[in-house]
Length: 227
Ligand SMILES: CC(C)(COP(=O)(O)OP(=O)(O)OC[C@H]1O[C@@H](n2cnc3c(N)ncnc32)[C@H](O)[C@@H]1OP(=O)(O)O)[C@@H](O)C(=O)NCCC(=O)NCCS
Image (cartoon, rainbow, N blue to C red; front, side):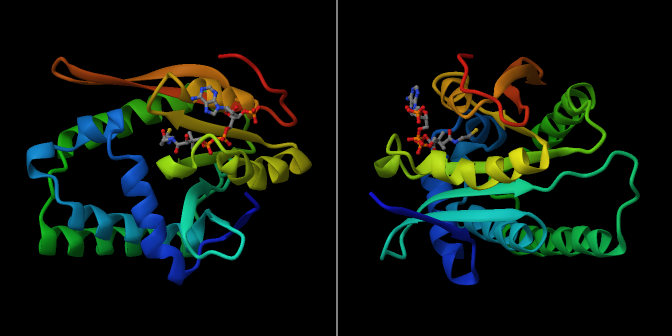
């Protein structure tokens, strides 16, 4: 199927939110960080829409659609490389506050929607630890923050096209890429096809209820590999 990869627009936000919710419905990280008995799909949709709009302004947020269709088949959200030690700009600082205020308003209106808050912070801590040891390039990394393809379109090359839109740019600039996969199989194999290598495990342990995430790095022009 001929696929178009374009920048996320406001009109795409509901489709992007749906794609993320459907593709992550049984994701190991989601199952750990949310109390399923109290999970609110509506609150989660509002939270993802806030994240999409933040990504539209601050990151690289792409959607994949079949030629001639408006249905979002896949989504990729990347954070741009941050030079180590470079102070945050005022614009970025304001954007962080805007994101925080939007999230606080959402929590006041919808509650936590099943989010197990201490687990979110356990993950952030594990992430910071792994990134500080894996991110050795002071020029920073293109960080693949979200990547999904809806189940009915998986395995048909949509993910490859979404991935190429940014790895191609990273290759041209000689920059590294980074991601955290919430599954070892099959995702580490899939990301290996795009040149990512396994770097380190993120251990997230909430008093014995634990999950592992898998940090992966891709050097510029990396060849496909087995992980
Ligand atoms: C991971 C994901 C984004 C990949 O997108 P996709 O469109 O299914 O991937 P593609 O069809 O472009 O395949 C990419 C490569 O992986 C290979 N591949 C696809 N599925 C595979 C599988 N189950 N096992 C091993 N390899 C696989 C393909 O052969 C292809 O390699 P090639 O181009 O060298 O032949 C998608 O499967 C997905 O959304 N999964 C559920 C949500 C998720 O886990 N997201 C990532 C969170 S970390």
